[in-house]
Length: 447
Image 1 (cartoon, rainbow, N blue to C red):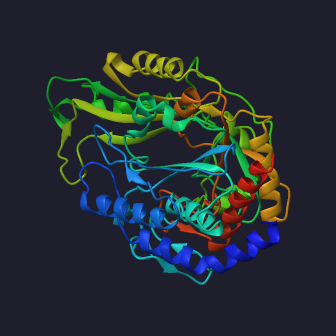
Image 2: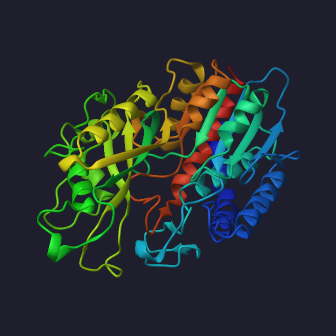
């Protein structure tokens, strides 16, 4: 189909696509431990049903040794046609009231700006909607062979990497299309070509055998919480850059994200400044970052006048593309073990060492994707990085080293607010991405 016909057909399909998206948003498919299992099973079954109706007759819940199952399907195209693997995920982040939602996260809501609000509206039920819309644009008969993988545990402890390693034959292809990303600004096309990795650990600081009266012993006996605070403060310098010896840093050479567009999605309080040095693109895509993402200590409500003997924190550090995650984690552990004040005892437990990823360049698939995006959006597509991490990509690359990767999606970075309150997606962005994916398959089939 020519581009104009694809655009016209997709436009006619959009009411149904958005209706399906809103139906899926209403299912609280949180795969985290401790959350109800029934919504996850309901989400898997409904997603499976929708993709079967879209043309994947053999779509099924794959068997996995633990956790919620991925959905897998294969749809043969014309003989000799390229093989494309489509990826998205059907689980979402939790949406606690403490995040400050202005509407119910499980009730899809249209606001005056035209966006659809709700948990998972962007990340990544918009990816599911994009794949569904593309399949419907071809009436369930795309011009290439398609393998579909929809993950059920992307937001928590993924089981998909194990599944890929156990069944590498299912993932042999010419191109992986990962629809779990987005443009920096809706309507301005980009391809994501680099993602940071993620290493994490927990650190426990101990100073005493048991709690002590803060008045009788305070000023001489060391407080574990204060020791932990001082230890955490050594992880960054005064500017906010990572100050851990041996951790790799770099600069970004591709398209730049302006500070103005970045601030659109960062609700800084009055008087608070951004941290780090270099361009915003350097700080997000080519330099490491470090955060204490959890603290275990006595709550304010449960506190009393005692000096705490022990305190713990979970630390996450994003690492730059091209680095060895184990070596970067080694540097972080070594820093924590050697910088505690007052001789405090430090115990560090490694949690994760997920690699960064660089998209292989120069292939026909990526070139076709850039052309498809430019046609769908009406302007030339540029290349950007992502501060987020998708460890699965390295696993897929190892399973099929010759395959190319296209990383894109409708999750615009300035307004989507993924993982946060009032997550949303622009329906027009989904429409453009459906057109782009359909054009990509057409271009692959004709080469």
